[in-house]
Image (cartoon, rainbow, N blue to C red):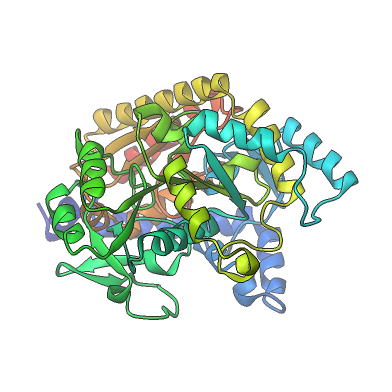
Length: 462
C-alpha cells in the first residue's frame, strides 16, 4: 500500500488516494462551470451589493466556484436559473421538510396576507395551533417566535430566571442555531468557542458547560457543580453527522437533570424527522421545555417553545408584567398572524401522521440504497437513519460522540461527493452528506441518488 493509500484508509477513504480525489474534483469543477453560466453571471454581479455575492454568508458553503441560484421550487425538486431540475434532498436544511410551497400552507398564508399580517394582537389560529402542539409533543403551554434560535434563546433565559442559576450545558458539536452560549466545543476537556464562533460576547466557559453526547458519567460530574440552569439537548446530534443516543442515555439524562435541579430542554428542530411528535413523541421523552422551528410553518419563518405546567407556573410567578415587552423574551413579529396561519395549516394538512409514515418509508429506502453501495464496493463508510433523515459518514466506525464525528470528517471527499451529486441533478445538504425526505419524495428520486452514488464509488475505487 502506498503512503497516499494508507493516509486514505486512516481518514476513512479506503483505497482512495488524495490524488484520485483531487483529479475527480478538477473534472467536476470544470463540469460545474459548463453547466451553470447564468448562476455565475448573477453571482459575479451580486458582489456589487451583497457581501460575498449572497444574502446570507452560509450560502457560500455550496460546492463549486459559486452558488447555484434557483428560479423556482415545488414539492421535491427545484429548478435553477440555468434550467436544471434538481432533486432536493436538502429541503432548506429542514426548513422545507414539507416539500416546497405545499398547497395547504400557501393557501392559508395567502388568505392571511389578505386579512392582515401582523398587528400585535392574537389571531384566531393561535389556540388551535397551541392545542396541536400539545397533542404532538405533550407540553401544555406554548409561545411562538420567528426561529428556533429565538425559541432556544428565550427558553434558556426563562430557565436561568426561574432557577437562579447562570450556566447552561450543551453537548459537544451540538447545533441550536446561532445562540451564543451553544457555539461551543471541548478542547482538552475544557469548554471553548467553536471555530467560526463570530464575536462571542464572553469566553464560552463563563456561560456554558460542555459534555460529550452519550457520556452520562461526565454529565453527572458537570451537573454536580449546581450552577446549571438547563441542559439544552438535541435528542440525537444532527449537524456533525447523525449521532444516535446509546440505549439508556436519555433515561440517564432525565434522571440526572432531575436529581441536580436542572431543567431539561429538548430541541426538536432537526429531530422532528422522527415522526409527528418528533423524537420526543416517538420515544416518550419527558422534557421540561421543548423547542422547535424551521419546518412547522412550511418555510415561513417561525419557532415555538413549550413548557410543562410546573415550569409555566414558575415562569408566570417570575414575570414582571409591566416590563414583559423589554425583558429579553419576545419580539414585535413573534407570534404574528401569518406565521401562525401557516403553521396551523402545515401541521393539520401537510406534516400529518400519514405523511410521516410515507416519509420514513422513503428514508428506509434511501438508507438501504446507500448501504447496498457501501457493501458492494467495500467502502469504509457508514449510513445512519433518523426517521426520514439519512446520513452517510466517511469513516469505518459509526461515531457515538460529537468529537468522534468531527474527527471522522473528510473535507476533500465530502466536497467532491457534494459536487458530484449536484452535477447529476441531486441536491444534498451542503455541510455534510445528509438527505431529508418530504411528503413528495418518491422512489425514483431515491434510486437516482443510489445510482449516482454507485457511479461515484466506481470512480473513486478505480
